[in-house]
Length: 265
Image (cartoon, rainbow, N blue to C red; front, top):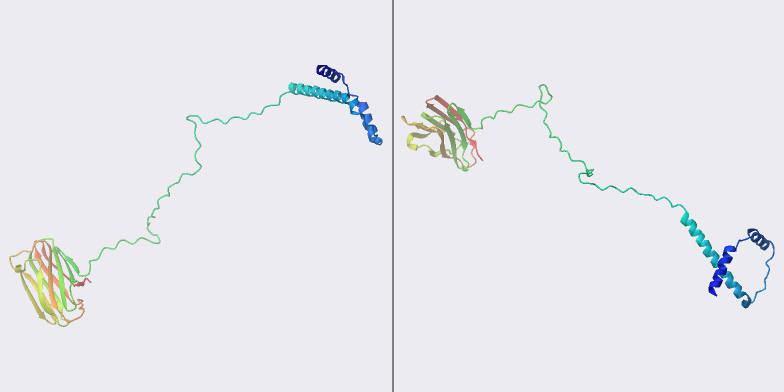
């Protein structure tokens, strides 16, 4: 029974040709006139017709679907857009470099040379002047100072004597101004005391210390020291008026140096 119904539905669907003009006329009559109330038909009489109509509609839809599928199957395919692949870097290919600039070391600053006639010429370096209390002549060099261990009531005046050649005659004299209470308390030297005749005498308001090299003796080349010690009135004593003098004789001739005693504190 089902196969028979299916066959008839297929035949009806294939033979069906819709009447377009008739359908439009019915639509126009329905829109122009009042709605016609139709009498309801009993379900028993119309059941079979309803089933047949449903099967017919199903066949029509199936046939239409097959037709649409056939049309789609025979339609031309849409063009496919192909995106070019990005080539991967191969061995030896250049790699992208960083955009960061390479730091450049600043050029070294140069000091402009001073040309003749420039607005600010560089003054020549001044020659060092002898320190206060120093003196030089021939083979002799000397420097006088106040010993830093001196006190408010006692002072020691020092003399450093340098010679570049042996001396066969040497006389050293230190003069200390009588500033009040000045009195001899002793002398000393780095050379043997037996080689000299040493005296300390006051004359004309000055205490004079003297070292005289004994005849036939020689003072070797080098640095030697002499010192005069004395008491004085309590207080800080100024050595501004004090001084020394050295007279010597050697193989290169005679030489003399003189100077004062510079405080060292």
